[in-house]
Length: 301
Image (cartoon, rainbow, N blue to C red; front, side):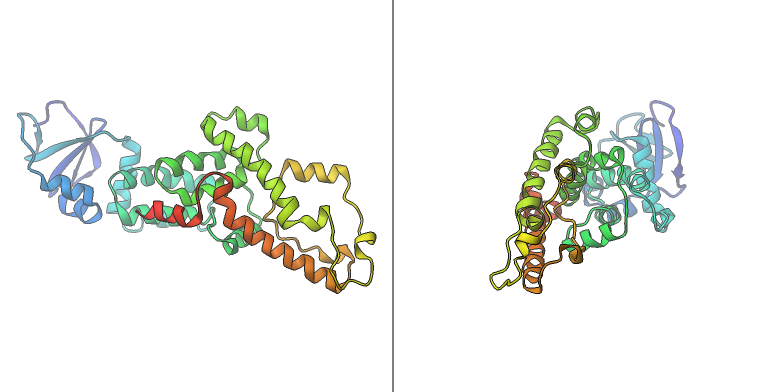
């Protein structure tokens, strides 16, 4: 019997072959099932465990784990209830997604529960695009992030080695007011600094790479209509609003208002498209995260 009385969890199977103790709560589960999901558990169970007096319960070996009880319980649900993830509503917002998967992702990462970990990542990727096409689809959906929610994703991604979430998470976080960002209790000071520095870079990229035609219009070589002279200058107030919330990945579609000739329109549209591709490809580098390629390599290793 155990040295201390333990509360039995809902995951107490009479045919279970091992008892896991988490925060004085006992889980009598199956070594074979856990081993199928996790090579960490598989290796743990392969190593002969010395049985000390009082280190068994109902004839099963006890293993003490240093995990959060709620997080571990959620993982047991994901393992033993095949349709557990189906409880998420199809249009769940980011707050709901984070509340649902955060604990599961932490435990599945720690014990290398590969399938469950990948399921969590796939769910989160719906709100964190990793391609420009995905970015455009998310933006066009009109989804709105909240500051208190988006900042939770950054430490979660770092703690669970899911760096593919970080470029978009930082990009959205640059829209948080500086005072609110600096006083946020969740983000590290390093990540706060990356947000602020990245925001300045995004503004420069918007002026130089993606929306340059709005700030400094250069007519096409074959323009015969003096388009650069006729184009209305941006007001100081409008420019300041853009600077506070830079969005170089915004796909400009108000081309008719430019009132320029077809040659100039073709030039600026091409420049805009190429600039957006460039900014997207450089997005990890802007926040000192490496490249998209290195991010995916790190996450999959």
